[in-house]
Length: 514
Image (cartoon, rainbow, N blue to C red; front, side, top):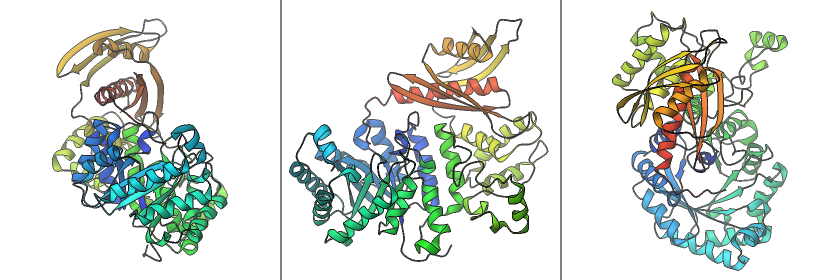
């Protein structure tokens, strides 16, 4: 799309607010992979994390700041000197660092959470922005719970923080309370009542508690906001955030209405969605806009007839515009390395020869089991291969005996810290027996919060994709495994979750922000 009108800046907070989704914790390598994908897409600002929350979060933000050079890198900080200094320490090496500081502005939060007066909070907000400006001129401020704040006080706070140097002011609908018409009017009110408002970019951060996050963000854009804070697949605290793909494609598809543009390379949207799903194990509902499995599927005979005659009759955007190809090349056991490398490149993966060689070996193993290998199968292989390093536990071998006349028994071989260990487990079924064997080997017994099985593709020879969620010491981790044998997939998912918990146990101190 040609760039028309003003630009709407995309501030992606998948690595900060998105990671606050239950079970969505990512390790530093996974966060870096997401950050690289966001950079490739052309995201303007990546909110890499909340450095003061934990040593692990600090290290991850610092790594992203050092390695990602094509985007601004933001770090979140509460409105106090300790948080701001820690944030700056994490992002100081970034090509374009941004400090994002916040404090609540609603009387509800002031009375029940902060227990401070409006005057005290306003003073802290101004001091925090001034302190952050001592490190960088790229400072963003958020009055948390803005949509439930007194408008006069909100206008006073926005004017004050801009006066001391805030170059971006973000208006958050922290609890997803607003209705689009109301939220659009709030943004219009700020533009009419804050004298210095045009000295800053006005941003919005909308939550989806009433299912209106994207609608609210777009209403704000219509009324002058020029930055939208959003996440891939709309993940985030509680019901999630404005979905980046929905905001971007709405602006692009309805350029006649908005007259605006973003810098996002939309052909990478589907790949970003799949990558996040693979890393977090949080699946996308089939009817999800833009990236859901049914987003470009048509079953109605009337719709099919119209599409055959002219696609624009029932498709307002093309699958290719978001990175979904209509082209289908059959990949099977006779396919060569070049065909696999080419298909991976078409899917948007930039892989080294060594990485392709490993994936090709796995591809051949899978092609010997099932007749046709689909894109989703390749994605599963890429994910598993990219997640193999620095694992405490590794799957080696599984044999299961089960049936209505046998006691389900699983024999497992695993590597634990590089040492091969073998055990047998018994259970009420084959999956239970498999998990019992793993628990014996790893000497763990974490509560199982979730066990889900999905077919990656169609057909009886499809790979099964298993998602497991384990809980330990107030934290939870999601594991994912894929294999044509559901029991092997289950074992891999359980082991993947154990490895994630192992990483989380090293990162004890966590502070969550709404």
